[in-house]
Image (cartoon, rainbow, N blue to C red):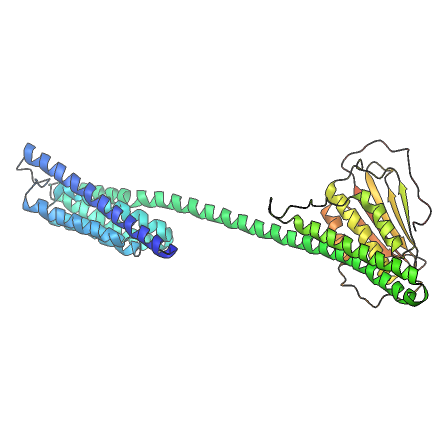
Length: 421
């Protein structure tokens, strides 16, 4: 059985249960009160006695009311007016006080119509129900010799209570339901925004990884092309470097994809941790091995004690990676200098400077998202990114990252002033 068929069957059973419950309740009142009236005061016309003709007519009207409730779900406003019209019919057949027994179906129909369509769309039906119930109650009261003013006032008050009270409860339930639906939609929207951000972060990570390693591979294959005939040994070394770069790129991409896997799904191999500032020397070594004349200068101690969060350290690592890739792509042969300054307790300053190109730039273009990615990472970590050309025709990128704590300035330092080869 499909889900829509199952849901329709459940709704039909629920409608039948509501109609049957209303019939049982109103009939029980008619039987109980009618039997008591017949025993206590057989000649009392205010309430039909059990077995009298009026009693059977009243029962027939109540049965019709209950039968109308079966169609409450598809046409709640029509059913509300129809069951309300049964109240003055009860008064006309002489049900007397038993006329009020028809209010049970009106209660159910009023709440159903308001819950389904709201107050604005059900206003006309609710108003008609008030008039009909008030008319029936007033006619019943007038038949007992009550003054017209009192009868019409009592009938109107009873109609407002019978129709308005369940409508008010239904409005409250409807408001709660709409609020819950709005919260669910808001949650779904926030989830979609989070997923979009994760996709952007994933794309940025893949760009940084691929751009860095593929740039190194492109530079080394250019050198390999010139060395393969004149310097076979150097060419073999370049091939090994290409293999190393390819392996490193695959390893990093595998680690990135591994972060997306569900726990326990394909975790035979350990996933690499997130890159940190401690990995900057390895980046410099890789760039130097690829042929870029690069130098690393560190002021302070570059280890796990750096008071910068993991996300900010990843942003710094990717910034250095992107800068070295851009230097190799746009300024081949130009000397580069990477500086990490840890001496200030309030922030860490990272800069990458390269001189003007000494060879024509690589024909392999850039997608133009490198600086955008660096800017987004800086904004995400409350860091300050500055970049632009230098006086000698080179390029300088500076990233200032706020620290999480404010430790005392560090006296020890480590300066590597010689190019890493």
